[in-house]
Length: 231
Image (cartoon, rainbow, N blue to C red):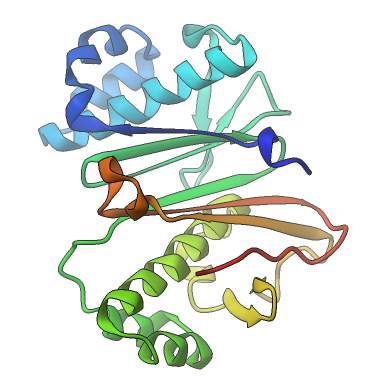
């Protein structure tokens, strides 16, 4: 699997407002009805940005006309392309950032705003393994927050890629530290032939995205256990 088979597009929502009128024309009729039914302006902006970016990415990378893409969702809300089953899609948003991605196999993406006033220790106790908790506790405050969101984004991205749902995967997907990086220990009901490719992007190193962290997971047929560096 080549990394360039995965396409990722990131957008700061507040800087894209000038395009919203044009982007509305890209949506399908069901999407427009959903957009109009959202009560909060922020929710409408996030929904519009995600769906428009996804259609624009499909057009720029695969030549699919924006209005020709039929984006449906399964019972858990995972989006898919009805007419292009060989392409897999996902999207995420947090605060003022929206991210969309495509891949050749089931894919999940999660972006998180790091400056939310969350008690990361309490959340970790509820959803992370003891080894993950010890790893976080051994770090200073800033590094601990970074590590927490590394773990969280990868866990949620896996939940979205697998379609198993967040409640089933948060406590049963463990990230184990190994000599050359990290590996994902999957829930026991995961298909045994699944190979996991995962990436963590330190968006805080980019001035425009300094308050965010991003994780992506791609599931393919197993060849060998995948590992990636993890800070």
